[in-house]
Length: 428
Image: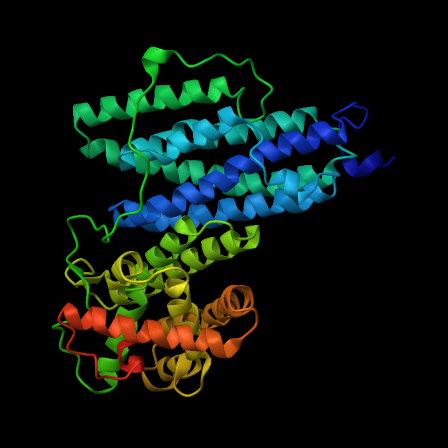
């Protein structure tokens, strides 16, 4: 005799109503959206290089989690207008406090000792309460999200362990006090689901911090030598070997454009949800590209910490560009232009395949090209269509203005490469 309902258990559970299900998902998803923003902001603000890159990945994953719930919620009779509202002022206070974490140790403690474990607990609580037949689409989403969420916790606790090895006693005490405060805020909100008993925060436990702000200059830990002008002072021969080295470095240096996208994501207000989802993904893609270059350099035996680390993209994003200029410069002036052939992304891939004959970089450039097609699409959507109302010429004119502004900015920082074609410096 075959099992009924494809083996789904507890099929006779009463479960939750559509309204209760939707409101609970709204709370879990609200935390995901706030985490996306927190992680993007701190991606640029935290100096620890490995953590910087990891925060971009976390931000993109949490954006996807939010997007999945946002799509599901429309099937549960909740409008996206209602869904996008803050469901609970106490939940908002919790997340704003996490945003204001003053150190990397405090941030990771709040994320991986409190908030993200509470989200996993909320998903398990939802699973235990939901009617498994009627709400199977939600349970299916949650089942697969838990893979990401548990992997996040594993990485975060490992990172915390490593940070604590080098923390002073006062830094450890600060982080533990921060954890206790964030835990109290979570309890005051009734947990992530809002189902738990609410206990007000003890006034004596409150910790006052300055509101989080994006840095005006790039942050790097002590292993790195920041460099505003890309490859300044580096001798790269004008031959195939020099070009291959330039290409590896250009990929490696994309951490700075990733930080620039983080700045755009965090500081841009009032856009549709999908702008934030796209820019979270864009930021993570740029980090991946940076890791392409780092991996290629490591394979060749280079000590990546001995190479100057380019920070100029973020610095000019924070200091130079205004309004939509930063994203225009990236998506239209650089990435859309990289679709031209030759040279462009296709030609870079062909060079690695046919001239350099390097299999690893060939794979990296192949996927870099694929990603840049996606990014050019972001430029089409958010610059040409959204900002310029579909006027491609106006968008191109703005992009050309940003190129001139960049040239002046870099010249002021001692750029001696300003007369070289952009392609010889890797596009970015």
